[in-house]
Length: 265
Image (cartoon, rainbow, N blue to C red; front, side):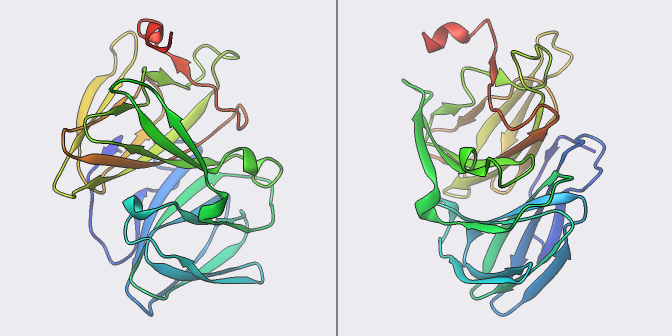
């Protein structure tokens, strides 16, 4: 399976990176697109799941809980996220109160936890970088997930036009463990305005991987190894939903490319 997957518009549920996809051992990604009044149900099996409402309003039920009027963004650029955590070995049901788009973010899990909702008021916002690598990072489940989730860490990054993120280039594939964690990651992108684009770079120090991809609205990227900086084209904002999991816990401590780490000084 390819690491970089182009957008496909599908009504209902669509696997972007299926479970057991051949690239990622811990992560999978799907997208749920429903018209007003439509419903969808699924079992989580061996994955804990975070339902991130990209746009629209929905009702979500799981483990005897029902939450109504979740979401409300017109797009991801219209405010902070609403998300629902659903444990492994359970099931969930979504009903669209308006037309709705939901990212279904999955991470391998063996421990079961109680479901919960993350509201826009719960989002922790960071302003990171300087010069032309400034971005806004929204933590959805990060420190607030300690003792509440098994592996998943998830958030959203907003690149203003012409700005870089995941920069200086960093990685987290465990090559320099314990200094560097061993975590997989998935990116799901949107662009504002939608006809715009960005660039996703991907490389390793030995250049066995040395790739660049054009980011279009709705594309996705699976990161099993290597450095992975992102750039937004002039005039266009680039957003990406990101989530991670791996075998070294939930501690996010990216390893900067030594050639470029001076940029942080």
